[in-house]
Length: 103
Ligand code: HEM
Image (tube, rainbow, N blue to C red; front, side, top):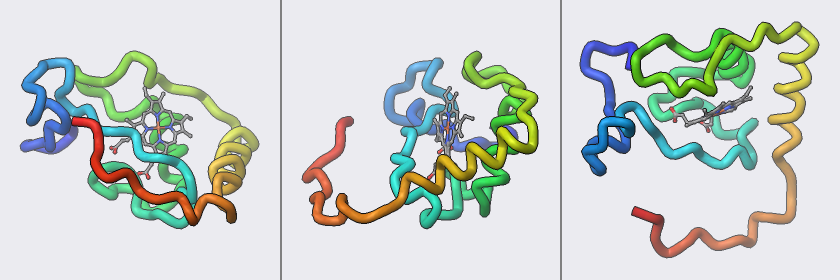
């Protein structure tokens, strides 16, 4: 929503005003290995993602009210990155992708 012609996300399909700027939250499984992040790939590192959330996202009229400045300490941020990196591992690789996705 910080671009002059933003990608309006789910709104393009639903035409519901509240869906402007809404994007499906991707799985965080293996997130350490799936850079770049967010629908437009604007962040290269998990540290950048955490900084984004710490600031409370980018102010805009569509911003979800659950996104607000967090005032995380350096330790909090490092812990969050460590948590995100813990979401990788063996054991799920045999799971098949669904044949179709919800509309
Ligand atoms: C500190 C708290 C949070 C952390 C650490 C976190 C972590 C992440 C990460 C790592 C991604 C990138 C996933 C990817 O691109 O592969 C992401 C995306 C996303 N998160 Fe969060 N998240 C947090 C809070 C929230 C909250 C509060 C909401 C909803 C109000 C939210 C909704 C979303 C959505 C919709 C996306 C996709 C955005 C896009 O594609 O542009 N997250 N989150």
